[in-house]
Length: 108
Image: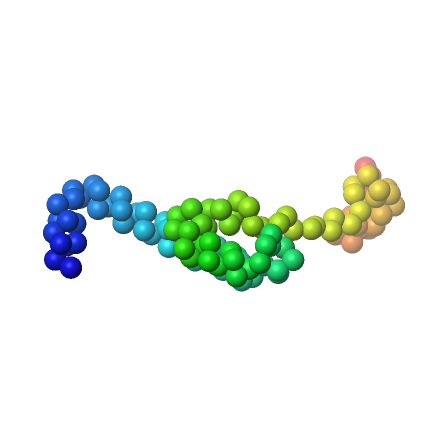
């Protein structure tokens, strides 16, 4: 153990700060990737979740990056109707709901 401490003492301050920053970035990425993996349904992940846990945890800095780039399948978003399918009457009723019905004073 004394050899490791002696080796760290030989490193410069800049190098130690850079190593510290990399450790913080790596731990942050691992935590974010694991939280994302746990919250995401299995159908939205490419491959088995247990394999991604291994890749994230043992992949060091690259594992979480690979997870964010490859494993997450795009989420399906239901957009309903498009703006082009909205009729003027529907648009007017939405405006009425938001701002109240139009009066003669508004037209002048």
